[in-house]
Image 1: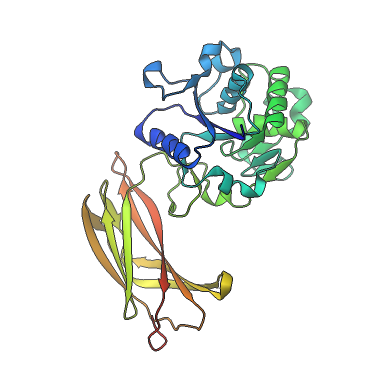
Image 2: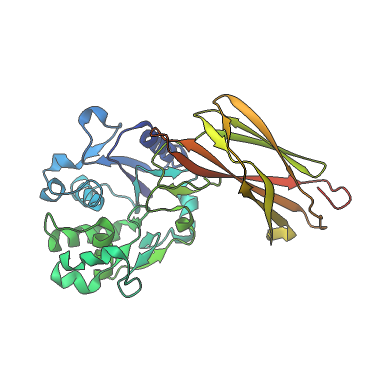
Amino acid sequence: MEYCILFLYHKADDTTLKHLQLLKQFNPDAIIIPVTDTISPQEYFPGTVDVQQFGDPFTKASSKWRDIDISVYSWFKHAKVHAMRFFLIEYDVYCTAPLKEIYKAVWDAEVAVVDFTTPEQSPDWWNFNQIPNLPKELQTFAGATRPFVGTMLSFQALEKIVDCFYTKFSPGQDLISEIRLGTIIRYLRLKVKEHPTLRDNWRWHEYFGATSNPGLYHGIKTPLPEVVISSTIIDGKIHLTVSNESSVVYLLPTDEIEQETRPLKNNQIAHDFKIKNPKSFTEILPGKAIQTVYETSLECSLAPTIIVFRFDFYSKRDTGTLMRHYYQEILQCHTYKEGFF
């Protein structure tokens, strides 16, 4: 098998299930294995492997968040699934494209990570205060995958990592996954490649940015609002119709637009619009739509022109807290009128 995706989860809510379904939808040729160490059997997703069944002393002493890597090592040691590469994906990763496309630039890497660092490179990173908790012979090799999630490992690399873990470490050591995995990688002198773009969509905590472009996003822990956009350009004005198909959302309108221009491939030009000076929230109820009109007065060049329009919207958590999102709508101008759209 070319690749295997380990879907690591410790909650079985609708958002987690949606993320698993998206992985299956975009990666139909992969082995996808849900792995847990805390979910009750009544909540298992189909095909789940609960590593607690192995009676591993490491998983019995582990924390569901800090020690998520131990679930991977225990699973690999006992399950013995063979694939050329393994992807470590957690419950809060939102997938909107095939991993083969997303990881194309690092597909043949021994180890691919979002970011790899050392105490020499990042002396102020707070988690390096755990170095004294590493086995003594590994302390000079301290490193970190930041974060653990999103890592891709070749079969040979994962095999060596698991062997090192069970040989060098002891149950109950106070270490975060990023430190433990990064140190083992460095100790084994495995060749690491950093993904060139993944960090743009990666957050340590909750991600509230755009998800309209195909890719992989972390961490999305609550359902994304289903906001549908349609757009037209009429006499130099952008008409956006915003339809809300799920929970209540709030559009952030403006009377002033910030504009940037940048070149694209094939002699195209993109005009980026961003919201400036918010005025008030407009509540959009499920099943409703509103139209917002934005003035533009851009001079057209001879090159094809693309407008990238970004606006903010918010959705409510169960606690009533507003979560910020933003949406990018790509518009193309096909006709010119006296130098204006």
